[in-house]
Amino acid sequence: MRAAKVDIVEVGFRFLKNTGFKGPCAYVTDDWIRQIAPPSDLTIGVMVNGADLLTDLGLLPSLELLFPEHAETTPVSLVRIACHLREIEAILPATRWLSARGYRVGLNLMQISDRTEEEILWYAEQAGAYPIEALYFADSMGGMRPEQAASIVTLMRQKWAGPIGIHTHDNMGLALENTMRAFDAGATWLDATVTGMGRGPGNARTEELAIELDALRGGGASFVPMMELINSYFGPMKAQHGWGSNPYYFLSGKYNIHPTYIQEMLGDPRYNEEDILAVIDHLRQGDAQKYSAERLHGARDFYHAPARGSWAPKALMEGREVLILGSGPGVRHYRTALEAYVGKHRPVVLALNTQSGIAPEMIDLRLASHPVRMLADWEDLLNLPQPLVTPFAALPDDLREALSGKEVLDFGMEISADGFVFDETSCKSPTFLVLAYALALANSGKARRILMAGFDGYLADDPRTAETDDILSVYKAAEGLPLLAITPTRHKIATASIYGRF
Image (tube, rainbow, N blue to C red; front, side):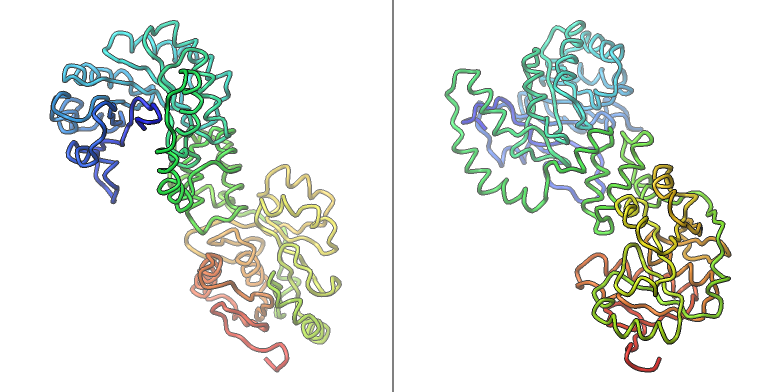
């Protein structure tokens, strides 16, 4: 960093709370910094979360625990406090305490893009009465545009005479551009991380910002040590942990959604592409600027309201076999045998989503329950000849409108953590996935038994294997109809051959 003419390195946080394992950069101690042995002419800083200081312990006792030594006896020169607008007044006295102990102090307002002009002016004016060296604003949601970054700097300058800093996130690929636009408007403290390393989409990249600034400073920086560091350490670590922007983070920036929602979903194998897009669409309808694990869990379950339905499957299914066609290659591979069985025994044949592995005239109903999958498939669903069974009343307005020309049978569904419940015109299910919907439909229809074809399964480490097995386990606990797979499967289902008697 020194060779690249970086002025300050903030090596991590000083958290008070110690719950769950975190590495040394979460609790940066003086001894740990001394082990690193940074160059003596490189300023070392740490960050503190304002919320950590506003606990029952009290502001000053919290600071005493975090900074027991005066600045001249420690390797830390700069302390930055990151906080929300609602915390500013309570946090500001901490800047006097830190300054009195010899620390340079920065104040960083998070989620600046959601603040009004009046609030930004108030923030700048309040800070002016305290010993703050640099007044920061952070594009925490990553949705800021370059002109907005410049206008915030100009606005803050009306009430703040000191240095202004900016901290950007790269959700929309604008972190560097926003930083440079703020610099053009007068910001002089510019944040970056090596390769953009940071939560979710990451930040402006140090290697790019340093190159831009070196040209403006007249040159003299050497980037060889940093590039060696990236190639040997940060590059492989980035490949391992996957920080950096992607279309999901772009959407989170666009819709002002806290990036931790995206980060958690990307790290959870239960979420596929459809799930992530559906959750984003749900979160954008409300205030998602603060991360909530409970809200994320709820957002994945699209059918929150009590189930409503108007079609009862009993008239079609009572006492009959139901054959469910999955999406696996087993349907096409054993097509001739399946068609012979359907022609002879006349089960009620249910195709999931757009599965069309046997002759269309042999399929009685088509089932779909995942709203995002349906948005992707709606044109195919319209053109397929079978009636569509779906929780129609609970679907988004635009999807109901798209399906207006289709024969739709409305069988309701409600997501319930308590498992399956089979009612006359609706069901409760532990998940919105179409397999669970099909199982519930057959049980509500009072079928005799359920045959399954095309549920080949996945490799052992594929998260869909565990998800399907979980559905089957909960279904078994609900004492549903007996299941029998008649084509090969890796799932935990009783299996027989389509070629024999069963």
